[in-house]
Each structure stands twice: as C-alpha cells, then as structure tokens.
Length: 423
Image (tube, rainbow, N blue to C red):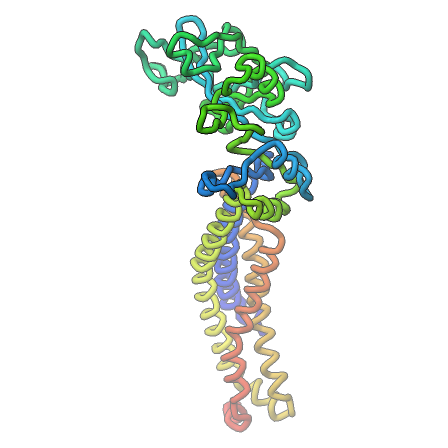
C-alpha cells in the first residue's frame, strides 16, 4: 500500500529523515562538546590529582589540622592513592647580567614529578641524590627586565607581529638565584648559581598552556638539604613560624598533592581527605560541572531538533488519514470477511512504523554525512556514538507509530455497511 503512492510516501519519509537528522546532529554537537571537555583534561595527568590545602578557617584554633610529612604519609597509605607529596612553595629573585626577574618555586617529591611527566623542551628530570637543580618553565625567560631601563612587557608582540625571544635564554645565559628576598633588597642576600636540569613547557604553544610553562619545580628533599645548610636554624623562605619568629617544627606546609590511580576514584579519596579537616579539590570537580553543562546543552539542542520530527509526525498522520480515505472499501471488505479490529489497527500502525523506520535509517545516514562535513570544516565538534544512531532510528519508528494511532483508530471505527456502500 505504501508503494501505491510512491511520491506521497517518499515525501513523508523525507520529512522523517530531516527530523531524525536534525535531532541526531544537534545532539552530536552537545556530545562533541562533552567529549572535548573530557579530552582536554584527560590529556593531563592532573585530572587524577587532588590539591590539598590547610583549612585556614580553623588554622588559629587548637583543633586545627596541619599539613606535615606525617599527614602526607597518611594520604599515601589511602586506598587507590599512587603518590602523595607536600608542596613547599617559595618565591625567588633571579638575575642574569643587567636583567632582574622573579620566579615561583614549587618543591615536590621526585615521585610526583615523575608521575606528572612534565613536557621537556631540553634537559632531563633530576634523580635521587642529585644536588639541588631546577625544572624551569620556558615562560620564566620572559620574566626578566632591566630595572634601570624601560620597555614593553614580555607578552607584547614586536612590530612584525611576532613574539620576541625571551629576555634571558634559559639554556645558554648564566642565571643567579637569591633565596632571601628581603635580604636582596637590603643588599645582604647571597647569590647562588641557578642549576637548570631541564626547561619545561609546551613547545607548540606561544604563551604556554600548563603550570610547567610558568613555574619552577625542584626536588623537595634537595631543597631541604640545601636550605638546612644555608639558613641553619633561621626560618627558610616562606616557612611558617611561631609568634617568636622561630620555624615551626615539625615543618608544616600550606599545600600537598595527591595522585589517584583512576579518575573514578578521585571523589572517594577527596572525601576521605576532606573528612580529615582539609580543603581538597581536583580538576575532576570541573569535569563534572562541565559535563552537567554539556548535558543541558544537549537537551536544548535535542529540543530544537525535535521540532522537525514533530512536523514529520504531522506528515505521517496526514499520509495515513489519506490512505484510510482511499482504502475505505478495502477496510469494509476486511471487516465483512471477519478481520479483527486488532489486525486492522496493526496494519496501519505497521505502515506508519515502516515510514518512521525508513526515515530513521536514511536520517541517521544523513547525520553521519553532515557530521563528517562539519568536522572537516570546523574541526572535531560533532560526535555520533553508536547508541545515538540507534536511539535516532528507534525514536523515528516510535514517532511514526504514535502518529499512526489516530488514523488506525479511525479505521477501526469505520462502519462495514457504510464502507461497502461505497463499492
């Protein structure tokens, strides 16, 4: 019966095809956004890293919990934790020739550095037993300036529109470091050669895209050994002290990093750390938030695309109603011959479902073609997983059958005598 009116059937199927393609492509854009969020974070080892901070709200209380080496050892003993390290953070003054700069140093364990696997532009990671040396982000070379001169800030482009070379070449120029910043401005601080083990950062990015582009990292054990010799019993840079200005023992930290074996276990480990009284957060928190946003976008896009399928459903209803008018005699004969109302209803529902199936299959094929074209033009922004293709086809069949309910009911209500009278 569908083939008797090929043009009408084809136009109805075309409507379903466009509606299905609209929904699938719209949802694929939302899924592509979600996929993009996940890929951006999963490319970084920090997705499974939890940052732990001292709870400053309770820091002055006698019940305040402190981040110490023993506390970090407790983190390491937790299930699903692969590595935990305190973070000793301090700032330094850097000098090279007439240029002066600054740097932010994060001293962490070698195990953590190896686990994070920082991108190396040159050099190599230090190993246990090496004297104090540093991993210096490539952007640090732009932090230098002439204190007696003037000029553009480092992030400006030159007249040709290109970014100039850094003021100081980290791999070739001699650089000195001053650990005592207060003493530096009082001309009492000693300078030490900055031993650079490696220059880190993203070589493909002009400005840098990670912390390893901008910060300086060092082995915390080497820092402790060196500072013990340099400062003796005096406070180290940025070391917490008591009211008498004496270093607090055991040494306390403001921050620690905890690496978890799998992103799915981050939430549980983070919860345990929070219950110990610390503030803890991770990039997985951002990932969950972004996924919620992408789901909302998917629903909105699916709603926009469903408008086309609703229009197609109206077309199916119209096609089936016209079919009933044309087949009144046929329906009457079926009833006179004893055909059940259930069979008559099923016949029209199956026909409506076949229209939906035909439109669904061709719509999914069109969706893949459109997705391929979109990705070729503007990048990988459309992702159609198998489940979406199957849901698209199933939804088209469902819409077709729902649209066929009214015509099928009308066919069931036809009087056999009235139908035969038209013979």
